[in-house]
Length: 221
Image 1 (cartoon, helix red, strand yellow):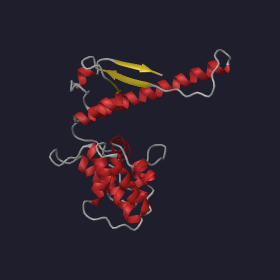
Image 2 (cartoon, one colour):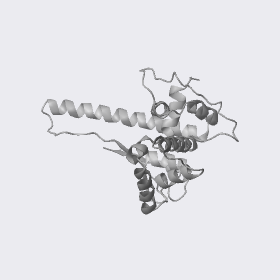
Image 3 (cartoon, rainbow, N blue to C red):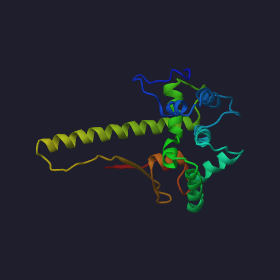
């Protein structure tokens, strides 16, 4: 466990969550996140729930910072309008314009919203939190972290090979970027997904079991 004032990686860098806690004076938020993630099962929040909760607290802090006085429920509703896929573009635009009129930089705000992966990294890497038992969500996150590390490694090795071949005149290529895309194809419904999207969603379009649906993957650059 780490105190709020001593949350740095081995290289001395702050996590995104810690940076936002410092910038918006959300002191005590790290301990609150930790307590809610390690609470008894009936009181425990998932990483996605913690991310949404943190983002709502961040939104409130930003609204107060520009002089707004949000009422009960206003923060949660504004956050829903900004982030929910089911909200119409018109309602989302209206919510953005309301905040912008008050002086909120909505683009910066949305860029600062954290993902559940960021919460997981903050709790485990920067605060050293360990839970007594591994949940399904933990196993999915661990698998996703492994895939992302391998994808980054593949991209780095591929870029190095291309650069070496180009510098020795064996191939001709302009300014390039290596992209590694790992996709999962479900034979039952014929749909395919980015592996991260599938793992986060937990099932494919036909509602098949995640384990059976993940049997065939294909990677492309």
